[in-house]
Image 1 (tube, one colour):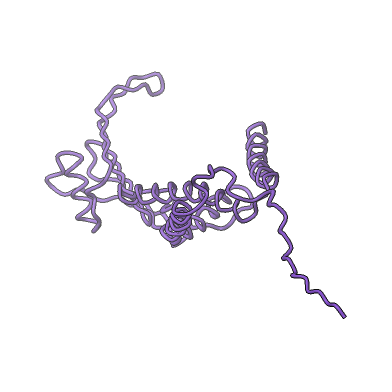
Image 2 (cartoon, helix red, strand yellow):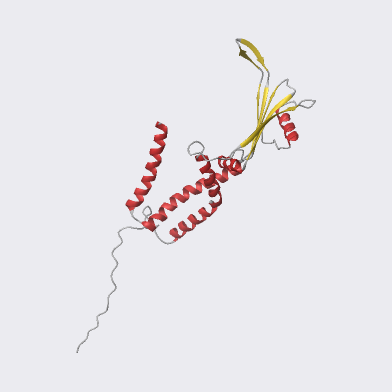
Length: 234
């Protein structure tokens, strides 16, 4: 009885017709560059994680200010009149310093505006309007606005203090923040753009179908343009 043993050949895999990095040349679609791409994508994501939560949450609140309103933070305001000391502050900067000492706040970064005396028309009669000073100060949690008309013995002051949600939305808008915060927020925005680009490259490797990639991206873009044009036309 003759028996023959035939070696079982492993089935050949069909050639891969899709997949790969759609937007990378073959010279970059392997090895060191891909390792760098994955690591950089991950580190950029970690850098923006905490700020992303803050800006994402406050962005939802700001997005619902008019339509589908969400009760966001409120700022309680009050108005007072402060009697000026003798001698009175000689200029707007001296007035800002005196207000800071009287109210216990730092007015070093206050915005000061002064208008000279001028002639205005009131009931068809020329009237001499005295000079005025405006002092404004804002940070994420509170605001101060002071107005003084030359010759008055007092200065009118408006103060407001917001709650936690109000503070978060002001942080999102950068209200009353310095250069450091603005640059930090810029780094987050730049990181999000970088993550979008590297995410597209990594996604094409995982899912691969060119038609699906193009369709998903164009659908998102088309929906955004349609809704924006609809709002403008309305």
